[in-house]
Amino acid sequence: MNDSKVIRFPFHYAWIIAITGTFCIIACLGFGRFALGMLLPSMAKTLELTYSQMGFVSTGNFIGYLISVFFSGMIVSKLGQRIFIFFSLLTVGLSMVMLSFSNNFLYLLILYWITGLGSGGANVSMMSLVSSWFTRRNRGKGAGLMTIGSGFAIVFSGIFIPYINQLKGSEGWRFSWFFLGSIVILIALLCLTILRNKPSDLGLAPLGIENEKNAENISTQENKPVENIYKSKIIYHLGAIYFLFGYTYVIYATFIVTTLVKERGFSESLAGNFWSWVGLLSLFSGPVFGIISDKFGRKAGFIIVFTFQCLSYLLVASKLPGIFLYLSIFCYGFVAWSIPTIMAAAVGDYVGHQNAAKAFGFITFIFGLGQIIGPAIAGVMAQKTGSFSSSYYMAASFAGLAILLSMLLKKPKTAV
Picture (cartoon, helix red, strand yellow):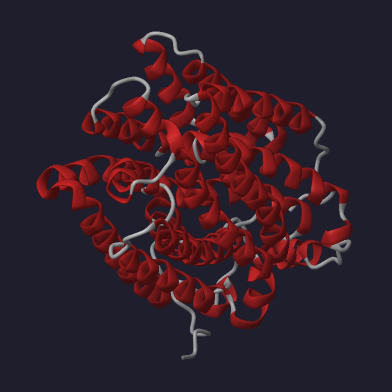
């Protein structure tokens, strides 16, 4: 198929890429990852999982995620984002369908590890497209639009999964995995049809280039050689910040519903409503903080977001009355997907669009280490103490460290 023909739309095709990216994130992260929090209580009851096993299921997913993002940059350079995203989402969808047949911990662990493989590949490849389709002053907006997919998925799963559980009883989680996996397969086909690797495939320039002269200048700047990303101090600096985000946010995302049900006495339906509020609030997080980071800088965006997250973890850890739980949910949801949004834009700022996929894949690998370690340690701590409070206090302290690291960020050398 030849994609070189010039395509005309009443708006830039970059926005179609971003909207398709929203569906991709719904599939690979929203359903492939964040639905787990709603499914864990009923799965744990049916399969007799302990707190530690629940934590290791999440960890297994992120081991798969970690392996995938480590190799994603190399694979994308050969296949391109479009094809790699398709096969990655197909892997996610098929493994989720197979999860509906789980009958023991080992089967569940292996399949959810495979889901992680697909999720990592699709997420990294999709987010790296921002740097190709959007110039620097628009990358936050583009990435922000993509990341709202997780919020839509959380709203849906927070309503859909408890309804199915009530309808089908203790085995309702099996139908949920099958149904959500089928949707992911359809989204994989959608991405294959619509996505393109770069604007020139459609005879276009990135969004934000206003004329041919400006396009030539920006292209020249972005094509300047950059230092080896594996030896770049700024990449490791960004990676450390992303590690702390991965370590902390996933503890809350994985265990908040279980905390509400087992420690606060909430019904699964009511806890699902709380989780849906996270999803609803998070719809604004990517676009709002993407725009803020475009206008005031990535450093300011990071600091604001981690401050909200630190407060969220402290509020749920302290076991204060119900109103503080709502405040915790608000703080978490309001900034939920802001860090990936800002990070995707920041990587493009520092290394340019040509190196964005490789650099974003590398720091996402570091981020993945945090996601692996976080839920495993939190689950073990909860098993020993009988409560997740200590885990949330730990998350708050790590978010505080992320604020300090964000304050030390320097401005990118280029102006693209």
